[in-house]
Length: 604
Image 1 (tube, helix red, strand yellow):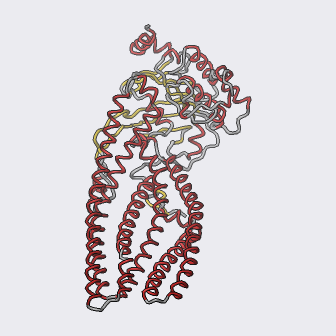
Image 2 (cartoon, rainbow, N blue to C red; image 1 turned 90 degrees about the vertical axis):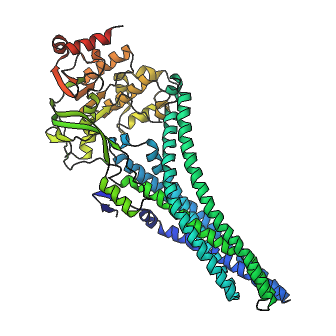
Image 3 (cartoon, helix red, strand yellow; image 1 turned 135 degrees about the horizontal axis):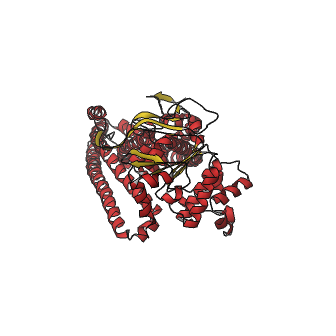
């Protein structure tokens, strides 16, 4: 079961590791066997050297045969660990990717608007991969560290003075590693933020390639890319230089240890308190100290990397940082389609970014949490906005850009949350409706719809997986898409590419409209959905919308006033207020602003 905190599911990496504890245990077990083989092999080699110096050749030969057996077992164990890793690492990664992607669906639209694309993609795709890979490396390096530690202890038992020297060097190295890790923690977060920006910009460039070329923005986008890459390069350089300084200091101390070991060893042989054989064993394995200290440092790096990636991944479950949609418990089996805005107020709030990185001290973190987010700008869109839309009527919202038309639709479909007042569907506050009721009752056709990298038919079946060929054929006809589909070699089974790249803007909108019509929701919202259509296709869409009249509540936002001549009611917006309400003819006759908009639209 998942633990709950602040009414939001809170999960951790332990949850996923526990699900596959058998596989992880087997992986650790075979790695321990392989590690034990390495320790045994090293000690047996040391013993072989001792036998040779004592002229015990038979014993040395027997030891070499045993070493061959140990090597065989060790290599087989490593092979098995690789098989187990591939099996369970992919399972853990897939489970993380799926749950993080699922959580991303729960975030509200404002959260997506407030954050860069890279933040989400990196957390869902890249960070899980980093975590799984680093955990595997952690077990590997832990095994090496244990092997090195056993050899250090073995060497220390040969001479007390050597043991004292080893302890001193290890302690000094550990202090250096602690300082290095503290510095790295801060730099890791800085680098990740810079990388998020690069990823977001790259995604935007790939998706908007045609617009960039058509507007001649290659040079400008190249400059922006260079700035972002330079910032990342600078952060990476600072990280690597500071890290290299600490590694260099630590490695210098270890090399000095090797020299001191030689001096001490030669001196002790000279005064007959250390045998040549013991010295050979000690010196041939003196790199165990280097391996141990390097391993401890690497373990710290990995733990930091896992911690950073885990915090980034599971921050998607933190409702303070990434706000989720909220739904009620009221379920309506039948929706008539009545919509009411009752004293609705809404403001678009911009926040100054407060540094909330986890590398801050506990005191600094507390100050950040107490401070919360600082409001930088408040743009009041609506204040006590009220209106009603009767069931099965067709209405339109018109007004100049920035008057709040699209915001009304986002509030109506609960993409945005109201600051005050309430929005009701069939007399029930939409905040009280459960997710199924709200999502199935409203279909939204956006101005720039997203078309998935599937076939035309598969895109339609997303809206209604049980749709018959007759139903699909009908919506293609109504959305003026049928003739285009008939010209394609594979017809309805033609793949449209990522984001529908193989389709024109108008074709994308027609496919999105067909998708919405197939859902046959009691409320259908068209947000500038005919803006990219030619006059002939636009007329066809008008006819298909007219065919829906009386069957669904239809809400339209349009700049082209000619497309809404036949609606039942028009709400004329100005500066976030409903200035006038009426039919097309009534507004054209009585509202000067409306009439001027129509004339401006039709002047060639």
